[in-house]
Structures are given as structure tokens and as C-alpha cells.
Length: 308
Image 1: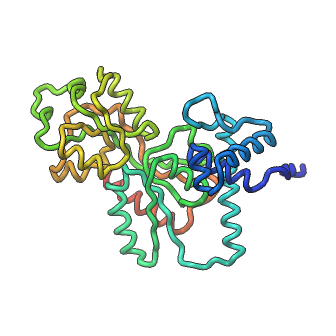
Image 2 (image 1 turned 120 degrees about the horizontal axis):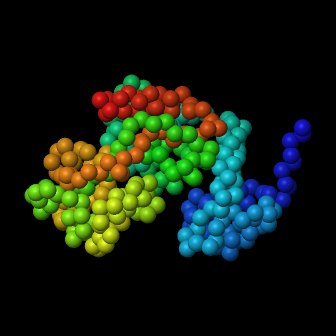
Image 3 (image 1 turned 45 degrees about the vertical axis):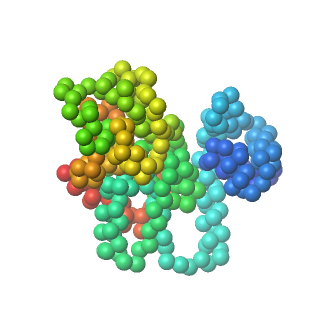
């Protein structure tokens, strides 16, 4: 059977505009990134939806989200853009020492990644590595377009895994980090409900661990946290909790060194309900290149020691 002809009304500008709006979850941010006006972005998206006879975004919610059709189209659009970039590079005979681009979530950036990068650099001095950090959605976007070779961190939600695969390395839970000398450390028979009078620092709503944290707090009767702060900044979180009585709910890997050094302490809370898998996320339509395979093997060895 002959392949279907692509509708000639679909232009590269349609795909690029859709991709940026979906990646950034904002028409305004996409317009700034593309250096065009917001009405131009909205018009381009509407043109694409008319051509496809499908809505790409759910406009009934306060926050811009993809429709079910948009989720599927998003994965294929990202693959197309990545393939086009690779084709242009090959046609232009770009020859340079390859750079391994690693998308790293905070849970591994402070724990398993530094040792791995150091060991890999010593064993392969010619290898260039670029560590990319940011929220989960941002890094998944880089992975889908080929701007990251792989991603390492907690597994994304099932709805976000279209066209992606996950390799589990180890499990990790959230901890309640506080400054040494925090009043709750001296409590006999500590219970999670005791944290309610204290200020909490929580991951932002789009963070992978936020849903688990919210469920854990609710299950333990913490329904009205006081003056909570939402942040994905580890530098701010670490500095703020060390000079206040705030309680920082954060992935254990982020503060493991601080806990070992005694600069932070963990409340004796049962946090097993926040346990989740950490590992590699890669694209299903592209095999990891040689440099990525070297990195993945080094991380596997480090994770085996971590599981210990």
C-alpha cells in the first residue's frame, strides 16, 4: 500500500509553533521564544487545528494543556523536528567532537551524577558532556526534539511517556529535611501530623514528587500547611531551611550529602508512600549513541553501589 501523502497545507512553521507552545505550556512564552506576536502564535495553532480537524489543546482549564489528540501529535511532531535537525546537520557535513547532552533532574544532580561524570571523564578524557537541568516537562521536551541524548531522574507520569522508554535503576523516597536543632527533632514519639504548625517548603505542582507529597500529607492529617513555599531551587531550599524552622520536603538524593555531613537533619517520619523509581528515560525511536552508552553503563555501576 502506498504511503499517505502529507497534507501540503502543513508547513514547518505550524509544527514549530505547536511544539513550542506545547513544550512551554504558554502562548506568551512561545511567542517570546519564536520572536513573533502572541496573536500570530494563536493564529498558527488555529490553522493547524483546522487542517487536522482536531483540537490540539484543552482550553477548558486554567492552565494550557494538550488534548488527548494533541498528546499523540506532540510525540510525532517532536520526532519529526529532531529528524529534520539531524538531516540538516548531516547535509552540512558538521564535523566536530560529539557532546553528550544529559538531562538531569535534581534527584540525581547532587547524588549519583557528580561521581559518574568524574569517573567517566577520567576514563574517557576526550568525551564532552553537557548537563542540562530544569523541570521535568522542560527536559522531556529537550529529549523529544533531540536536544538531549537521554534523561536521568524519576520516572515521568504515564501520560508523558508516549514515544519514550524508562530503565529503572533504584528507588528513592522524599525526606523531611530540617536544620540541626529543630524543635521537632527532640519530640518523643514523633508523628507526621506534628509538622502542621511549621512552615513547609514543597515542590512545585508540576514536579513529579508533588502528587506523592500531597497524598502523604493528607493521609497523615496535614490539610492546612502554614505559609507554604513552593520551589524547585535546591540552593534556595538549602539556605532557607538552615536559617529557619521550615521543613523541606525534598527527594532524598538532593540532600543526602547534607544529611551525612550533619548540616541538615531528617525528621524520623515514615515516608515510604513517597517512594518512586529513578532511572534513564530515552526515546524509543532512536538508539543511544556510543557516548550515551558509555555514560549509561557508568551510571548503572554507580547505581549498583548505591543499592549496595
